[in-house]
Length: 306
Image (tube, rainbow, N blue to C red; front, top):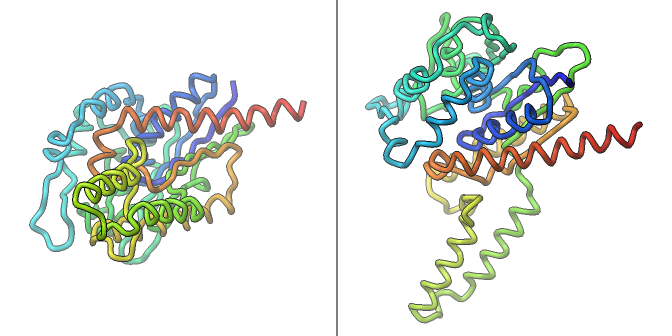
């Protein structure tokens, strides 16, 4: 049985793809001996290391837009929108608290010190404290106070912690990055949308409505909910894309510094907002398929060396 050191990047609801990826690795007989994750990667990786994946997956599959909103404990603070206590409480009801050093699988979570900019690496202590710190998107979630530090999302400094996963002799390094941005693909999408909407103002009302519907389907084709990337996008879309560009850049540097043996990737322009949180089954299957493709390539390479 081939041992795997698994690194999972930050990525919001796109991180649900890691569930399918982990299941695919196990189905093929790979033994995951260690996991390192940032943000969504820390959430899924930590739950897996604690043996709580079945219960978490069942809960996740039951989420709908209303249930997602009930998990948002909005705050009147000027510094953050959501306290983040409700979602952690809901997960704890299904996955009991445990210290990281007592997990059956080695686990590492990454957070960021908001004031010093230092990377903070969790390898012991409360599992859910580490996860909560790692997922604390600045301005979105309340930062975590820990040992005199103020901690926010680990994606600010180490989006894809390939260099933080614990290695064992003879293992392979497997990574899943959900922050890929393909400039050529994005440009092709923009060109297609521009061509579709060109001359819209001169069209009759019914034709304009039909054109808008076509553009909407291009913008959210059912599998990938693409965000507008125009300069006149709204506040949320521009902020989200700014974080995406940052994460893509940091992840790319991480891959160059610590190349994985197996790499699965999902575009950043996929499954945003409530759409992502309420389409977990679809995202999980997408992750399974992408990991299968990556493993097929890796295993074919091994066979060619024989």
